[in-house]
Image (cartoon, rainbow, N blue to C red; front, side, top):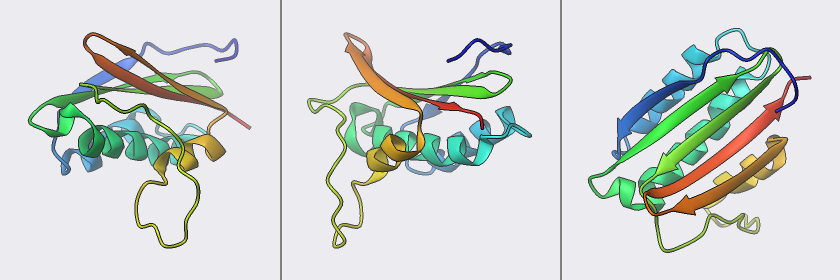
Length: 131
């Protein structure tokens, strides 16, 4: 993130259930209420939360954690999951595909994004710079 005044990060833990993705979206939306990039951040957080539930051990009775860091113009959102044998990757666009395009949206909309893995799971994050 660029040098901005940052409000203390907010974090929330969610059960790894598909129904919790909407709650994660609501959490990000309420945390960033009134921020210039709130809509984009909510969309991308939803994609990362969905990936955590669908593609990682979080969705098999586990949990995922969403952390939001709000700057005056920029935001950073991280989704920690319980890990998977695969690495997050942008899929090539395919008009026939009904899923698998979430990280493509992150790649196009976010200013930066990435992931890191460790013994406790994986963190996928994005940053969006305000306009």
